[in-house]
Amino acid sequence: MVKVLGILWNSFKMALQELKVHKLRTFLSLFGITIGIFCIIGVLATIDSLKTKISTDLSGLGNNSIFIDKWDYDGGPEYPWWKFVKRPSMKISEMEFIQKRSALASNIAFFVSTSATFSYEENNLKGVNLYGVSNDFNKIQTFNIGKGRYFNETDFNRGVSYCVIGDKVAEELYGKSDKALGKTISYTGRRLLIIGIIEKQGSSMIGGFDYDKTVIVPYNYYASIFNPDNNNPYIMVQAKPGIPSKALQDELNGIMRQLRKLSPTQEDNFTCNDVAQFKDQIESVFASINMGGWAIAGLSLLVGAFGVANIMFVTVRERTSQIGLKKAIGAKSSTILYEFLLESAFLCIIGGLVGLLLVWVLTVALGAVLPFPIFIAPSIVILALSICIILGMISGIIPASIAAKMNPVEAIRTK
Image (tube, rainbow, N blue to C red; front, side):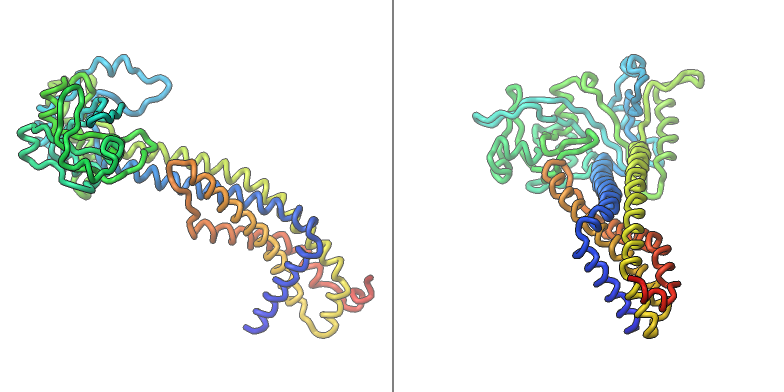
């Protein structure tokens, strides 16, 4: 064990000495390693952070949920909007029918929204989302009431003029969210009593629900003010635990066809959109980005590997007499081999650490401008160091073998 530690320490010192004595040569040779690690870790860290953010946003839409809408969410360049726009809008009676017939659904909610300008005294806030929702909405969606309370069953049934508002609405109109609770908020000459304030959520990257700039009211109240058919309502259905979303989607398709009395030859005039499909689409996009990052990094690492190999060839030639002296006083060929292999690995690790430092600087810079934090997972750091060690071993294997096979007498005579 002591011998192994001695070899490691000696190799590490030699790598630092090489960097100290031949700064420019070593820097240029390790630059490829640095750029390669920077590309790999930069791409992986950004994608991991982005996936975490989008996964959180997707869970906000409702885990294992189906959105029944007249619109198909697949989109695409040939999206036949003209076909979907003619479909009938969802009705609250259809939601109630599904509640009675579905055996796989746990929570079902009706949702409709519009945009409005809200005010309090002299303060006005434009572009606020006004959501009209039914009972189970908060069970499907992911948000917490920070102050006050959410609607109870009586509020929903009576369609009272109560509301729950987002953190940004509270701060913009009342200065502090604490001051908004129990106050009234106005829009188009009507007033709502604020009974709850939603905790700050942050912006969504997938165009989901923006709860920070939202006012939520019971659906029955919303329907007494607006015509829901004009604001694209839809039904949200969440599966029971252990039920795949595909099974729920198939069941809902059958229920909706029965409800709308569609014959076997008629096509659907609704779409059961599976929220999970967004995750699959995003995964495929991330896979393509990953491949691009690895391709760029692979070229950089290849160049870096040749640079490290060149350093090691030059190092072996410069230390030929030292190698001969070591072998003459009893150093084994395997010891010489391991020393040079480890020195090569340490050089790559130094280049990799510089790359990691650059990625850290990048995460700090991007974190200040992007709507989500970028983090470097420990697994990514381990991957980077593993790549450096393996690359160093491969780059140094030929020079180290040459050094290990040297004849001590001939090596000592070399100048």
